[in-house]
Amino acid sequence: MKQIYLILFLLGITTMLSYSQRFEGGLLGGLNASQVDGDTFSGYHKAGIVLGGYAQTNLSSNVFAAMELKFAQKGSRNIDSLATDGQIKYIMRLNYAEMPIYLGIRTGERIALLAGISAGYLVRGTEYNDYGKLPPEDQHPFNAFDVEAMIGFRFKMTDRLFVDMRGAYSVLPIRQKITGLSLYYWRDNQFNNLLNTTVIYRLDF
Image (tube, rainbow, N blue to C red; front, side, top):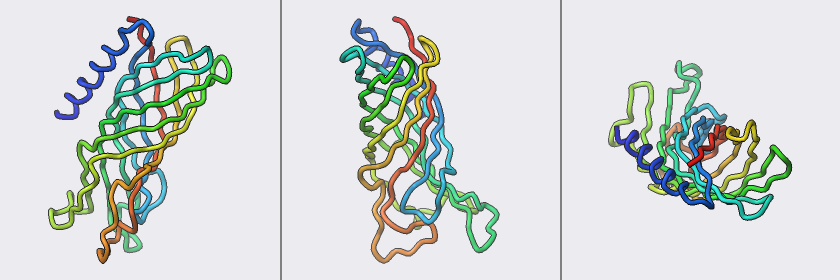
């Protein structure tokens, strides 16, 4: 329920920003394919939803600046959930409220290149194994804030519909390795590493 209220709050702020005549705005939704560097698994096996809104303004005919407010699910997943070869099921679920700020450069009528930075606040972080949520003595907190560098491109489908594809990586660790602690799922300092596909719908106000 807290997540639903958060999404509604972010969408409300974005809508108010978009009322300015210099800005356009709209809604966005999509999927993250994520992993966490610093664990003992590899591959973008953790899927998560992305929901929010955006506001955008043109700086010139070919350059625009934009800001988003969104809810994003990230984390890590061991796909070998049957405990074969000595492996144990592991899932890390991280829910963030995020505010990306970025520049776009239009390279043609339909393509724009994107680059920017995103600040995120961890709403909830939980880890699971074969027996459910990790017990309190095995839980190690994540940093409350995450800062990611991101790069990608935007494809214009219609005057209102766009598709973004981006890659993002944490600038600072989301959780630092504890000296002397040995766990099967935790190898080093951990960083969010994700691929994101988002559909953007522009609204007229």
